[in-house]
Amino acid sequence: MTPPQPLATVIQGSLSRGLEARLNPGVSVEDLRVGKFVVIQGQRNRFFGLLTDVTLETSNPQILVNPPRPEETLLREVLAGTGTYGIIALTPMLMLVPRQTEGERLYPLVNPERPEALAAPLGQEPPSAGAMELLPVKTVPAHFSQVYEARELDFRTVFGWEDDPERRNFAIGQPLDMAVPICLDLDRWVERSNGIFGKSGTGKSFLARLILAGIIRKRAAVNLIFDMHSEYGWEAASEDKHATTVKGLRQLFPGQVQIYTLDPDSTRRRGVRDAQELFIAYNQIEVEDLALLAEELNLSEASLENAIILRNEFGRDWISRLLSLSNTEIQEFCEQKMGNKASMMALQRKLTRLDNLKYIRSTLPHNYIGQILDALSRGIHVVIEFGSQSNLLSYMLAANVITRRIHQAYVHQTERYLQSKNPLDRPRQLCITIEEAHRFLNPRAAKQTIFGTIAREMRKYFVTLLVVDQRPSSIDSEVMSQLGTRITALLNDDQDIEAVFTGVAGSQNLKTVLAKLDSKQQALILGHAVPMPVVVQTRPYDQRFYAEIADPDWSQAEDAEVLLAAQQAKSELGL
Image (cartoon, rainbow, N blue to C red; front, side):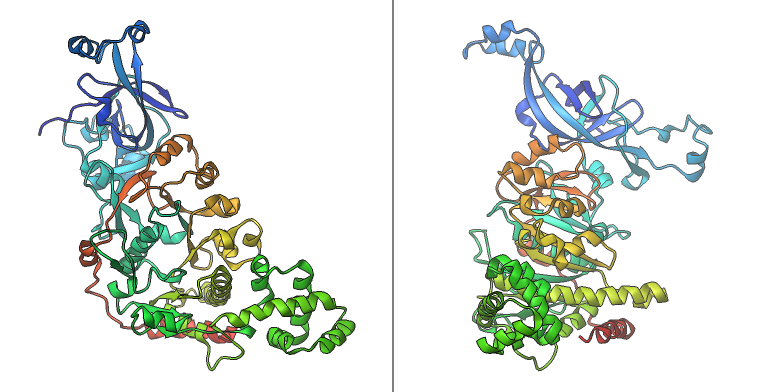
């Protein structure tokens, strides 16, 4: 085996600031890119790290005063590597050490001469990926340690491989300069709420659809997707000039994904098959839902206080009753219940806007949200399309009403599971995807919406969020700090960049990496589902992906006892 050639030699650095390494003779700075992965071979450990900066240096300032002229090729070659040289900044992310047995952990000095006790030097055949253990970096390599380009086995050791039978790994992309898959650990992904961020046009929806397809294929969780722009269910416009559309999740997994629509006419015009109609009744709307819509409906605090008075008097039917009251009846009601007539009439006038929403009904023939909960309990992934009802008022109202009631059912089912300890009572892990997330999770709304509650609860009730947004700086900082994994495409606004790294140690070098991303098909991934921050060229969403993601082993066999547990939780809530 031909030993790899070292790229650079570590000359200085610290654990907090990172390392500096001088490029070895014959290595050009133009061959190295920010975001490149490297391995640093220390005396006792191997470090896996990230290249975060490249600079030019000289050994004598006089060289810069009288630089070689363009025709002095020989002089430039003489100076290269001696008088002039390149410096790369490195951030060690992980230590790769051989996995020890229990006896070696308890008695580490029993056999210190065991050859595999140390990381094999680069150039020798290293231990297999499964024999290596990943540890956080608590020290730095010694002076003059050699820096090498990371190899395929190093990537497999750190990020795993998609066909690992012991994990639900999903290849999200590959490094910028190597055709090696970078995998997300989907079990760790669904444990916490996560975020996908990037400015408009960077492919956030494609990234979200890619990951949702992986979750479905690997059966890591069941998904509830609020599809604001009809991009996830049946098909979406393609950004590839060779194709006009790309397949949605329903086409990729026809037996595992069900589309519900709030605008049946729009859905039929787009040729969507077998979509279920979805309606919401006035008696399913709570005062808390209107508080979220206060800005959209221009509701004052006084109007919301009067809404509470109406709810206390009329119960769940308070909106229908309010809309049917005459001015005289409102006057009499306010005199009896200490309400404010002007505020109540303003509330009545503004709530008439809800009549313009196609999916709002006074009464319903049956419970549509209960149908969604039935589907989720069977492991069917649900996409809710809005069609022409994709304005913010419509989107925020429907998403909040539906999510609140489904969350209530999950709370009841989780409480039963904790009481019975019966594995059949355990709820299916649920991942809820929302777009324009800052509308639900801004500092004001996050304290009163169900989405803020879910984000703060983490995985307490088996429900997590996938938030998709272009303005992370508008999301509450407490919510951002609770996100387990963040996938970030290009951002230009400094406040948005700061927000993405909320609660992330040593983020300064990563900000440099983020700023250098291309505007398409590149993203920085960091957090719970990956062992270290990583820049990837995202996986193409194309015909090859369609073939690779197909799930021939899926069947519609239903677990009757799991269904019964979900139905019991629904009956307790009156769903």
